[in-house]
Image (cartoon, rainbow, N blue to C red; front, side, top):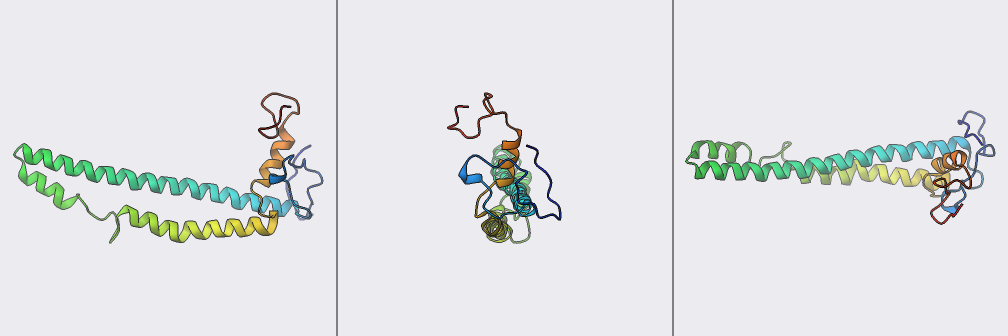
Length: 161
């Protein structure tokens, strides 16, 4: 069965292959447009999670760079290059990345604000449109695309084909 795009028709998913596992099955009465909208919000959350990971990467990378600058300053000091060592310590070691903020503060502000708000909205949309179920749209796409009985096309991990 082909998965048809949502339109103004308010389709109820009858033309879609329902997911075989209850955790991802479309709830009774959920329209195509609602399932797709919930899926789009979920996709937005996936991008936000990726961005959050990069923010944590930056946090760890900047922290490591700060330690390396301190190590370089110590080595310069040992090599008799006190002025250069002091310049590194003064201009780089322990400096704020943004005005008044180290990276841990950026991470905390992001988590407490934007990320938390997005997660709350994602849960609210799923709760209202798909009964709290995640990946309903993707589960329908999987069911429409898989070949029953073919190895590697199992519906769920417990499926033996």
